[in-house]
Image 1 (cartoon, helix red, strand yellow):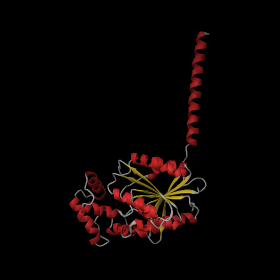
Image 2 (cartoon, helix red, strand yellow; image 1 turned 45 degrees about the vertical axis):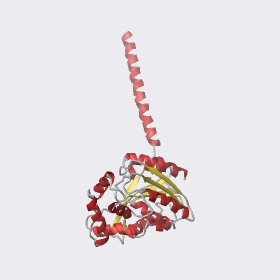
Image 3 (cartoon, rainbow, N blue to C red; image 1 turned 30 degrees about the vertical axis):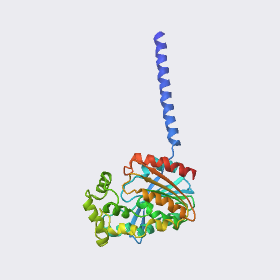
Image 4 (cartoon, rainbow, N blue to C red; image 1 turned 90 degrees about the vertical axis):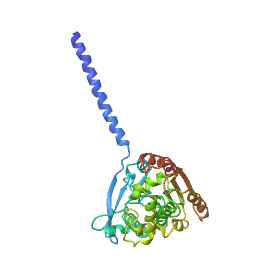
Length: 318
């Protein structure tokens, strides 16, 4: 009998352990079900003028949300916004998210793809995609749309705001002028050739000498548009964004603007930052908010955490 009782206790313990394992499994399932799912869909839009496809991703809720964030990526930095916690948090806050990318500049349609690098064409193709998705009711067209652009994407934002009646935008690592002007300042010595700037320009353009960088920057305006000077980008790319400073479009655009810059970003200039805040005061409508961050690392996970801290409260309040 004693042996029988001992086996019974062991059996009870085993049964309790099985129940615990089963309960833990059910709990994990329930918790995972409560975690929001981001159905990120990778697609491409064939543009007739470009004769090529524009890649984009779209994360939508079960019903198309009245809150929409459109993300325009940088040219020099490669980012995976969809993999960040900020992306997830924005989606969880009720926003559908559209990320618009550039066709890869390679393959059979190389030159037609490169036309995306011209500012006007880039903006037009982005506008065509937004209009197409809106017409198909895959995205909402409302004042709850927010544009968020990094570097090159930020320089496109004012015209897209005006074209789509959007009154809120987030600008990251941009100035009221142009990226090419920033390069000219470095080449001319108006901005110091620091070790960090040298490393950045070497990483982005394969140029590790100030002398060579100065020569390449000067060639942008002297060589024909189909030749190369700065890295893999055509000269017309830089000039098309430089011909009309962003401030020309920006000061005509009413609405609220949210500016974020990394103070140690190689193209950042304190006087531009101060001028920007004066420029906002001259606009007839709208207002601005400004955040300076530190420790720029080409949008490392740490950089995205910093951006989340300042951007997410703004979006949720909005």
